[in-house]
Length: 406
Image 1 (cartoon, one colour):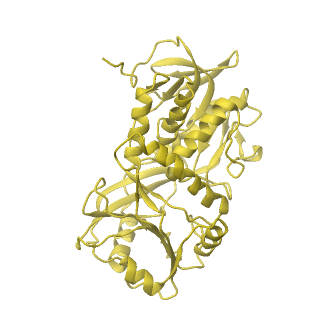
Image 2 (cartoon, rainbow, N blue to C red):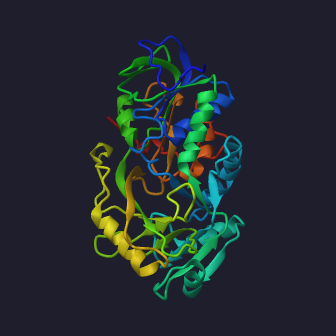
Image 3 (cartoon, one colour):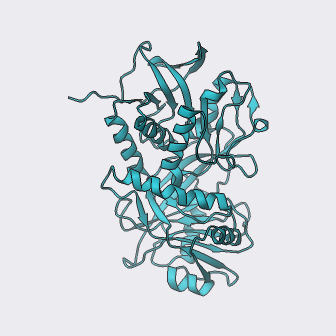
């Protein structure tokens, strides 16, 4: 009978791991997966349960898209595709369902997603094919209605809906089968000390030693790095999501995002997904890309969808989408940390130099990065095992001035 490696805490450490990964979400599981390919002994510590709904991987679907306002992000999205293809070889469940990406709205708007015109320039620079759309073409081809006449859009055919739950399950199963990976859940880190160039990590169930640390606990990043006497500047969104039942079975949407000017205290940005058989068949997911009240601490999250955000979303669906009943169903939230550093959506770096043994502490934090999960796992694994990444991460490094000592 195989050994259950998901819940086997020791009262004291009996081995020294090459890498201890703090955080068992997609990034932590992907890092362990790539560590295992190099036979690096790896311990993954998850404070809740694996595949939980209490962090930035809550929900089952995400968007894969290539449009970005920056060339390096367009390139990174394209570079991630071979990593997705390799991970797909481990499961029969499709991880990416290709449906295309539609961006549309007011061309002057700068949003959390960027800007339509800037994305077109970035894709042109990277020779990414796309189609420009007028407002009438958006309505005729993609089932939207009554859009303002100044709206315009673009369609990029490689966009996809990510089955994030299947992605995590695939990584989890690969790690469970690996002799090099141990996974412990309900193992929150309550202490980190250093002894003889080793990290001694304490949880309620045991104490573990490792040569390297990879810190990827999603929105709970500061809860962990505070133990190393530094922190990052972040805000936290408890993001609302819901589903709308199809009234026309023939209606299908791509993944999409609408750029609009703010109205009152509403962000007025929305995004959506197609119907897929693995995520509430006969329903379409639509969500607001804003929150009414950001949080100063992730531990303040209620995990209850904001009724005003739901109402804004329902009203937008009623006004502008065809073939859907505007009554929201299957309501949920997703807790995400967002960087306060201008131009730094994702933070990928080593700990600051004043932290002892900083070159052996790797961290990823903030941003929307589900589309990069397998690529980021490879990057974080290389940083831990080699002390550097073969992939250019200069755009995501924080720089010492962005850290805050405790």
